[in-house]
Length: 269
Length: 135
Image (cartoon, rainbow over all chains, first blue to last red; front, side, top):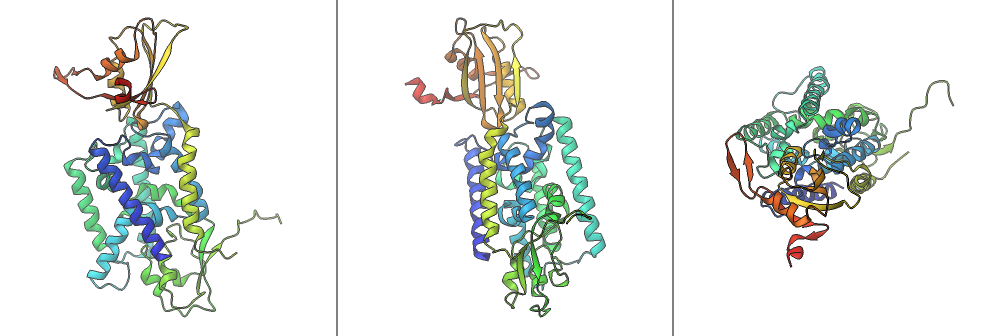
């Protein structure tokens, strides 16, 4: 499954790069923006209130965003771990940094205390999301483009990508070296938008305490740095179902994937 | 209930395919412009054009402005994500080739007084590639 996920990621990164270069060379009229679900969220307000799309966003963006919400309710942030090309790049960077700097896990140079980590994941990301959405709705422009690592990398110097956009990208990559997956964990507005649906996500990793030896291999190999070995069921909204933990687990059946039952309202059978 | 690991890629593929397929249900324009002196006519025709250069609402607005001086153009609906313009016109007063010519004409930048050449190029007209139309 680890290999299959890598094939998914490589294929999507290659397809996005190919589409970006073709568009930049004038060989295609379909830009990499067309398949970005975040564009769907940015234009949702305009679509539902005025029946118009904002800037370059269109129906594919919106439909993909709605499909992404459904996917997240079913399989949590599987999009981030299996599809998102920016997520793939930051994950590969984190894995490379871990190998080069001979780190045990993905906690980075300065492990973030749990409370700060939670505050940043919720507060900072929601602030970024709110800022981007309000600016888009006010201006009718996709203002996030110049800051979006996906767009900066794959649009092949697309519209709105300026010199400072590459500085932003370099800063994010630099941050990723000391704080693995910092973009995904603390800044990505799409991650913030998916977070409530991800918490409600039905597909979850569960730890079987009878089989678990407590070796902590799962914790060390989780790119999101989640405490897999310390919970019975992984309910965190950050789990991307990348299955790095199950691949690293030396004991079969200690970690398994489960459909979590939908909680029933109290007082009803 | 235990779930097999393969369910994750299956869900990813199914939801992505549903999203791309379902986009047909959410079609909406980026811009609708009705020309001021557009007199209604029963014989109005609509030319569907794919126009290189129409990338967003701003570029669509500028393309629509190219048609301001052309008599007989009634309405223009832009779908920026697909670089498409649906231009409704009165066939007694203008034609699809005349609309194409107006769109592809140099664009005046009012702020500088400069003309920009080759900003728009019609690459498809009513479902046919423009080379085929020319032939």
